[in-house]
Length: 375
Image (cartoon, rainbow, N blue to C red):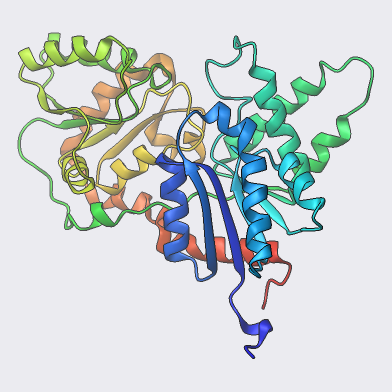
């Protein structure tokens, strides 16, 4: 019989929204962390419905696993799972496992939701999930602090009972654990070389209003009118409904001969090749809990230019952060400085976020979750 003490810890991964950054995170975790994993997922559709309905589905599947003789040492899930409901349902079958939640986002700080009549339903699920879990891992300090601030405001609306203890209990079991990122496609393009010609600006974000493309493209229009030399690569996921500025920008910049690429990359390798053609990767986001796309651009050797707020100040040296009112000035200055770019210097800014280096942190935290750190 195999020595149970020496076996790998077995972690059950639960993801009701298995797509995008959630999928990339779990795929990287399983590839790089030396533990045993079982993955239980649902497709990335209708996140609000997932938050409301995934827990009974997951609980039933877990009961089936136990009925088949499977055993686990802990559970790791995302915030799209109502953990309070999950633990209540499992508890009825006397299934009790250490459970951690990874916060890719939190609904208190999610943009555009405050006017939604259902806003407090989803922030409430995040709150009770935080109370019911054993450990909470956040992808940035900004994510953690905005979650705690949101809870404080939320509890302040309760007129006749004192729930302040909830905030301290959640903070005690919360910590920041930056996500690992798969840079392999980008690293295959190495060594990095500086190109000839005008500096190349990269935009590689979702085509949505919270990334503030209006500010970005308006600045490019002004640079174009002023005769400032540059080229642009526009990447990122696009949707059926997107800000109108994208179609206007494509037409206007194309007429000026500024576009090297405009649209979603067909493959990961194409995306990596395009990033490596860039000199400057830019964010004008008004919402960002972490910012994987910016770090991908940095890994490709692009100089970063990011707002001096949200998650960015904890990830980048001050010299790369700009006050919002100074964006156009800082963009022009950054373009002028690309002549002195050492792409390998920017490349190394992303080192600590690569999965090979991040894996050890996850190994330690998940073993701690299982209750036997040194086993």
